[in-house]
Length: 521
Image 1: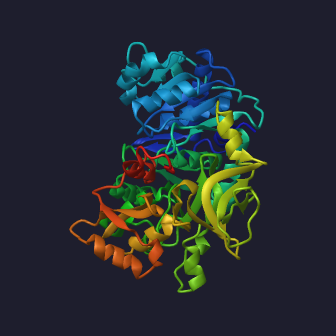
Image 2: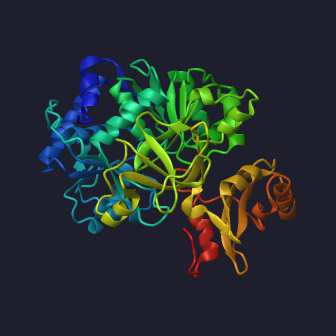
Image 3: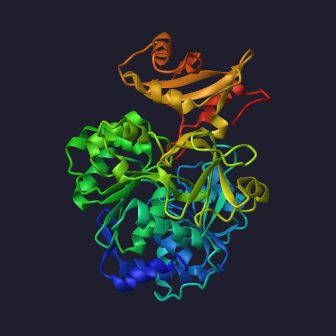
């Protein structure tokens, strides 16, 4: 089924339901569908055919959802680009995806003028009011077209979304997500993340629509629920909390860094967030200490998801029922896990020869389901390396316990091998962050002439608190084996992060490994 039909159905069944709220601006489902249809017709008029690609570079706004669903309806691939990337990265993604048209927010007019000569295959750039003379006006494109559109008859494995990875290991790769993938993700959202989700629910989009929040806009639209989009260009905790209270928000997606900002803000105790039924978090590791604090402050609404661009938002989940503080050691241990496989998703652990490992043994996490991407756009080598024997090889290391819970230890590239011992940085990070002076930590392996690699912890401190290198290493010795304790501590003001809040360990390692032949990235 064309994933765009979710909007068509919701507009027919619940035409007057609130579809999008953006500041004081509101659109019903009938209005949202009409605008998406007009844009789909407009794309056809610009020569965009079924199977072509359209890039979307916008801050979070209604037009971004309109553009995505217009592409779905027209049978085009949509490429939502993270607005926080560098212009060189914009140009790379636009070129690599072979986009015929680029739709942008007016804030990016000058950027697109600057890179225009670098994207020669682009036929048209569509912006909003007061655009550059050479650009087409977004509203003018819509107003010239009919609000009726026959959703394209697509094959289930046609590309719907080119999801470009964050590029932590080099140039971004475009994961080809099909209509089948997105429909499976949608059904899985209803089954696992938000059971009972329906037209009276309200989803808040405080994270970029080019990423996880945009993925979860699809099931929201499929049930004719409301999408509340914040009209801010950065994450502002108090504004989020205020909106949750004012709009009676029932669900939202957040990266762990966003949840940390929410619970550290005094406003968390000032606003009513009791309407939240599912605060879905994922995209990066969340330390158990932070999770316990979030559970105490936000109540029984947390649901963890583990997924990646190649299997959008969906590999395993830690349910509402697993987020409890009852003193049971087994239950407490589960808080450190990534949960159990999602509905209709298979997960197993394999060794370097792709042999399945027994429960409790560490290896690479692999998965297969209808959610797994078709492959990487224009990259057959990376596709063959990642999709083997019908399984998606995640590059993540972990194990499955006797109860079927997945414990995600590290990216395989983050593994530290010191003196022949395999050392998993997250285990050490979980200890260090318990120190009251530590705000954030990343543990990496650095060159060592004797041991191959030694352990360094890069630490940022809580404001106005202090701890010495020796004190922190001694603190580790009290909690973990001596061979796992850091040999050195680097104190920094801030840890480098990508645009989705993931700590850039590659950037941290580069300081030590530049010029070395054995660098692991």
